[in-house]
Amino acid sequence: QWARACFERSQGAQINVFARYPLYNTVETPLGTHGTRIRELFIEIPREHQCVVPTELPAILPPVPNLECLTLFTRSDSWPYTHPSIDSTPRPRVFPSPPLRLTKLVLNNLCWIPGGIPLGQLTHLHLSEGTKFRLQSLLTFLDQCGSLEKLILANANIVDSPDVPGSLSVGLPHLRLLTLGVA
Image 1: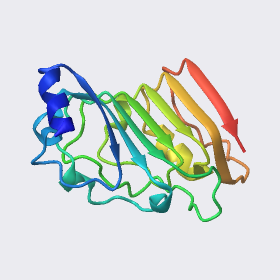
Image 2: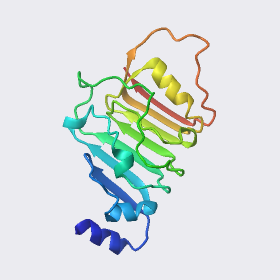
Image 3: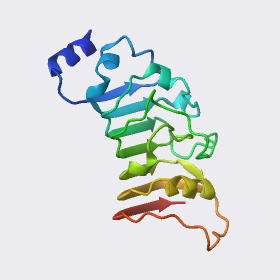
């Protein structure tokens, strides 16, 4: 009832939504009927679900065509030993259709990268808090993000550190800010 009152009082204004995982079907809720108004979506994942890849999200979340910022945040200690490394493929979809206005993606302490997102239009990418990557996987992912202006890798962990071949490169021609805090 409280959420319904908030949606009614906002009267068509843009909204920011905070949700906790696991989510339940939002299609028949105010969230489902007001998906076009959502500009920022923050999904908090609790510690007990830190290594769960939520493949059910496209069936639960509404289309969010005007979404500009997506934050996926896991509530757990950084660097958990049980936390698997991120593989940039395959990526599970989050939404039933791509959020075509998405420009900011924040991933905090995840073991998966969301799919169905137009990576080429991201201008801001923030990966942090114990996110573990294989170097090749990270570079493959970043190579798809050619519009990045701001890239933050804070408290990220490269789990293998082989010599990088000279032929391996990532083109980020629009990059204006790079923050690295990498182990």
